[in-house]
Length: 381
Ligand code: NAD
Ligand code: MG
Image 1 (tube, helix red, strand yellow):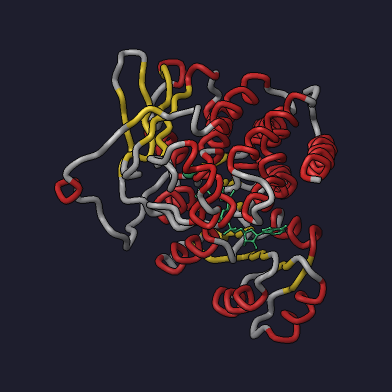
Image 2 (cartoon, rainbow, N blue to C red):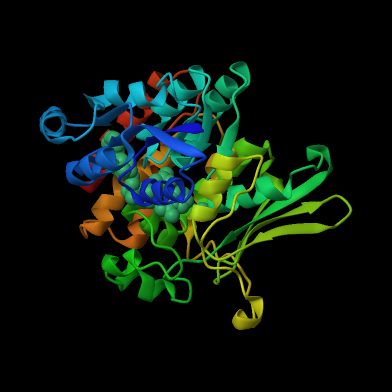
């Protein structure tokens, strides 16, 4: 039985991870759960999975859980609790399903505790990629991608020599604004950004898909996971989200991984790796689909993608600035305080005022993020 610590159990990835665990009670058990605000759902999850420990952000919610649980689970709160879950002694694998770069500290903590890390929290790698990869190497820890594109590439690369890879092709659905003109995108109500055509996900990543910042973050995530150079990463719009990504080798061969858009597949593979288990999920029927479509990514209508490539090329703390500015601006966009293209303009402006430097601690990243937050607040005013 593999013991799993699940950070962010009440979110979209968290709930789907628990679905996978439910399908394989003989293979997995949950040893830690964490949540931010949703104490009612966390209570249900604790009662069902009986973890050793659980944590929630606010102290009053932790007290409420203690008086209401029907389990022997030890309840923690705040960052201390989150880090206790990330390094829980009994856990073999930590699945980080937190959203945002606040996931970086628990990512580093889990690695330093020697845990295999199944990583959904892409912002960890965008903000602190060089630190995360350095710690993973030092602690000889496996980083297993949960993001569907990265799981696809990981699967395509099994048994291959990385020196023989030419490039990767990250597929992108194009999001809900894929076919709209710039003028229409700029005047469309932000509520439309929350309606993704293929995937049901948390709010932040759904907006990131509409702006294509999600693909930009994934480009940087791929660079770190697969040790790639900027010119080895291409983005291809593929509206059906059936091909989850592809790898091209030096002999021109291309290998792709396909399947229905269902996050439980990459989640389960990260938990069962190197094995595959049965999964009770819809199967792919290509004859029913009849066709798959592809388009070039349009960096004019989706400037965040251009900015992400730029930040990656500059390196050092610049991807952290890109990510932090985006994280701070997405809520302002949803509250209609900044428009779609103002978001990209502000990210670009903040990037142009940052002098990137080499970092080697989470604290250094947090300081840069605080500076970005100040910039965003000033520019919004
Ligand atoms: P979500 O918003 O649905 O869930 C986030 C989880 O993190 C929740 O459990 C929440 O309680 C917790 N959390 C949020 N803020 C917190 C805080 N300040 N302190 C402690 N806990 C906090 O997000 P999601 O869609 O599940 O995405 C999670 C991660 O996975 C993101 O990095 C996202 O980019 C990535 N991802 C998601 C999908 C998807 O289909 N949802 C696909 C690929 C990658
Ligand atoms: Mg993805």
